Amino acid sequence: MKSSLSESGAVAEARIAVVLAIKQSHLTRFNLGKALFAYRAHFRADRGWLTAANAVAGALGCDERTIRNIVADYERLSAALPTVVIEAAHSRGIDLAQRRHRQTVAAIESAIVNEGNGECDIDEKEAERIVSNVLVMRSPNQRELVQDDPFVSLTRAERQQIGRAHV
Image (cartoon, rainbow, N blue to C red; front, side, top):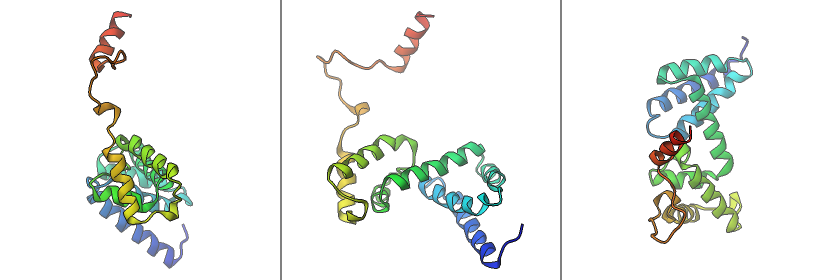
């Protein structure tokens, strides 16, 4: 594998970023995905990404597929939302790259589109307002049970019981 001095320097920088992100991976999935995304860019051309992903997975104690999912989650989020919005959520302790926040990301995307804001039109104050408005909205999982609501969702145990009864 031939590489220039600047390319090997870039790989070394990417490796340091990945190591730091791995050490702090419990803090944000977004930052780990960002570091792995940059690391992957250096290895993809030489078809060495799968080997590198397996090594990172071994260091984290997870599967290589998890590493690919972390990178995919980062790519999905960074394509969907402006960085300033992601940082606003992070300042509130919310890592939007986590899969459990997909509905929140969709709600933020919708809020941005509904307000007619472009990605470059959003400043820090506007991002904070959008994130706080979305977080204040109650999710369907948190709604109170209304006595006269004829459509109350079944619990997981109830669905399993019904499934066993029909088998």
